[in-house]
Image (cartoon, rainbow, N blue to C red):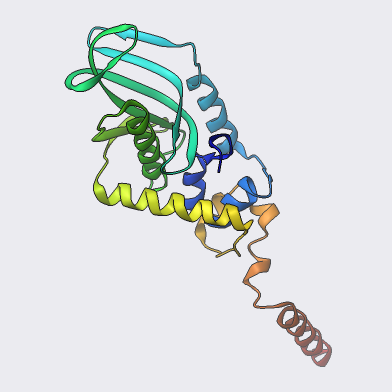
Length: 224
């Protein structure tokens, strides 16, 4: 696969949330927006200002930095990358000193129990490590609803899970495979609910669906 054909890093968050949602968006090019996704998109538009760079003392802040990982076959844009003055960091063109990158991903809602956001952040960090030839031990997630920053340790376990999920995404994409839905509570928060129709997928098959309605009709007729 050529680098310009790499999958979007942001897709790993969709993939962790629901593999079918990921396939509908990234394979079938379907999208529907609700209030939550609209607010999140506007927030990211503010972050992705590629011209923004700000240096204050030992902190350099860069927005909308483009990253790519040949190992993961993913590419995308970091909301914010903070470069902290650190003797264990790397030199940066145009700036004196040695700097350690820390990716910061901005999210609209609140911290999640699953690893969806952490996996996206980890993929960004792994891409930065490839590009800058450095080690990034941690990153951060900032949640707008709580105005809190969550520090994320980029452990070997999280990195392994990120690599495995990226490999699975690329395998699905190569096959053009859209998985069947696994209905759950998470479906209610999905902007693609009306396109996916998870309620219909609870039926085991079309014959069973028709049979159940025929039985309902017959029962109603007897009652009359």
